[in-house]
Figure 1: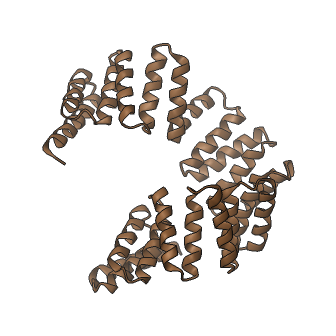
Figure 2 (figure 1 turned 120 degrees about the horizontal axis):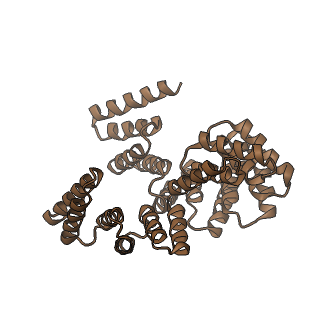
Figure 3 (figure 1 turned 60 degrees about the vertical axis):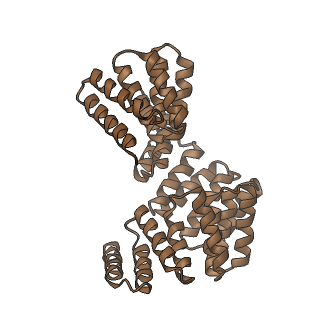
Length: 363
């Protein structure tokens, strides 16, 4: 970072402080100073727009939010702010479109709007269902299950709500209750492909892979273009030790969707189990190119690199996995093994100790 960059970020931080303290005019000057030094600082455009909104200068604010979005199109907060500016200008249809973009990018904005609606009408079953979906996408699985429960109290015929409540419960580890929810969906429509796929996912986690394959088959019979169903089917065959059959399924999933991270990851694990390490490495790298936040892919990439004797690279991969999930005892243990192979014994001992402590907490 050069001196100009540092100065621009310092002015941005100062503007934020002043805005929090209610000194809007001085905050505006600070954001302008930041932009004079670095006009590509998207956050400075956004924050200056917010300051202009505070002063009732909605048209100027809108122009600043547009500048921010020209630099960073996937900033949900800027889309949300833009929606508010448009609403104040009476451009309601455009405002709604901006709010929808914000919600597509970041479920937190969707959740805020849904909760506002539920405050007005707490008996709206569709709103409770939408709240469940937003919470599910945010990883708040227990709250999601509760929201779907509220939706289903009002509308027990909502097949999608039963499936999604089952998914929330599956992610919480409550597999039997999750299966009951999906059965309710299938009672409503025995041909629901998503319900059959969800049942396959649950049966896999119940260690019933043969039944899982049958559930995925029923999904694929209804919708042969479901890449995730093919991927789940592949994972079930892998669970049964049928690697070649699993690879055929993963490849079919990837023919349908070449960007399916789960399929690349699942194929990589299968190839690793078959000791085809070079091929496995390529799959984990493809998965991480699509989703660099996949902790399990980093962990498996590190393990394959370790097996190949690439210990320095393995350490870097293990550390990435740990950065993403610090409670993964296996990742800490693998890090210890790679550090030990590099004769870095104090660091290795520390990693092994952390792994042991995490395993004790688990049990």
